[in-house]
Length: 261
Length: 204
Image (cartoon, rainbow over all chains, first blue to last red; front, side, top):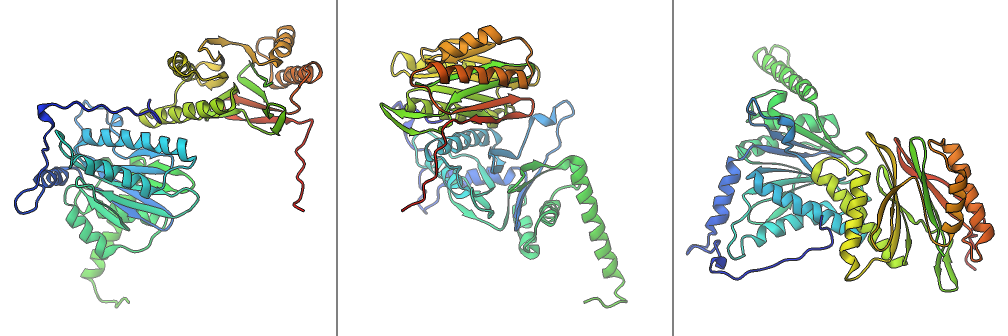
């Protein structure tokens, strides 16, 4: 436990020269390769509603003997902030740990919880530092960070990537097939609240993931209740709703005898 | 001079502390809360150097919260007490924290517990404890009247006896006290005992 007490040591050795260096045409190949690692990671979707923010993440099939509960993909950074990532999970653990310490450290010195933007900036800053330091490689993950700023009811959704850039989003996806998901979101996004936000997030994820509660992990955050992980049964229920709506839409397309406005 | 004391009941623990903030001969305020709620089921009553008291208890509180986020479950009361003692011990031979602590907590499997930590990093698990000049009177009263498995009403009666004794017999007795309780439903303020109220004077 080290909140408020951080010592850093640097040892100058032959392995201190930079790994991430510019190519002749201005690329940072290590960063781009890190983005490749992200593209291979599981799909993550984040949707921001009026009063609700939802993170949904693809659950790759767990080996039969593995205790699936030990692997939580959507984690709390603080009571009011949560994070999901796509890419190297071990790198994610390191970043999440540092972010959790920073959340408490901020509360200790500033007497106020972090804003979502502050902690996003911190994580992005950390990711950037590892693209400009000797002897280290970039973090191989992109994060989606959700939360409510203290003393307000405004929800936020941010994304960071291995280069260390970050920005705020109404809805976004990262990881496998994120382009298709983002296209879907661009076409179908509208301001939603409560359960509608959950449905939109799951619908987006189902574009690329096999449907079913055991393939998706969903967490919902509201100002009052904080982060809540949905049970498999709840997810199945929403998925069933979505399938029913899809089927009804298909049927309506096939029988256009009644004109609908 | 600050008084903090505590005791363990049937399925709860109580920590009481005076609420005066004093600098030499000046009383800054009479409603200073010296019992920090460490997490949902832990109370940390602290007395000593004011700066150290606030700094150290807040530091412990944030580290207890960090543990919970990292590990998904809260620290037990015993673990929190041992962590706190470890921090006191580490700082002792360099830059000691001049803080005395009474840590009360409730764990589902163990029930209520009370820990005595002094500024030179002693740690004792106890049924009753007290710090400060008030301890002379509080400990005496508790030694005489304390029994195992008291109910909340009986325990509060005993706490009130201690407060009365402190008010009567201590020359610079603190006028106000706060009593906090922790049980299976969590840690919370139980009552204030005020003999002086900071009256709200409207601006001229």
